[in-house]
Amino acid sequence: MRNRFLGLTVIAVVTAACGQTGSLPNPSAPSTLASSANIDDNSAVLGTLAAHETGIFRYQVSLAGVKAEADNGDVVTVTVTRDGTNTFNVATKLASGGGTFVHKSSSGTTLGSGTWVATGLLDFQSYGPGAAENTFGGRVALTVLVTPSANPSIHRPGILEIECLVGNPPPSAFEGIRLNVKDHINFNKPVVPGPTLFIKQ
Image (cartoon, rainbow, N blue to C red; front, side):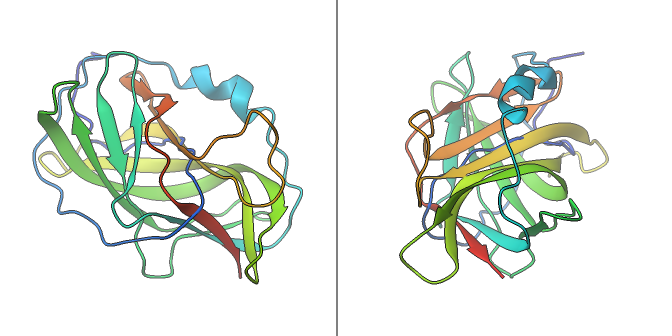
């Protein structure tokens, strides 16, 4: 039941660092998710988030994507589209946009790839404005649908957290992402910080 490919519709949590965005890779093969993980593992983190800012924000990550690692050494790379639809509304809890993912083993073998779509906002904590106009740091938790390109009829829920260190972040904050695919695999360790950013609309 737990060993499935990551090419499913998922609600995910990702934490990403502040910076730029980029184009998306082309999804392809399915991945075998060898690690089981319960989405509730992220509940303690999500419970600390608070919507200190109101309004609509656009979320961005680096052109090459941002990576996170699971306990078994598997790594996921997540990208975000650059078409302007990647937004969330703090008041209404609505979210839109999406991107791609690539799931690789600890040895670097590609296990699968596909797309993800944001379905809602769980919470947003602002770290305050940056030097550039309308830029903000903070941490967002999005519900998403992750779909593998090799099996587009399968959908899995997860949580995607994106975190940016612009503004005045707490000492425990970090730049990067986290993606928890319910009952399949939890990419809970940010790898190399990749630029991310929130832009108030």
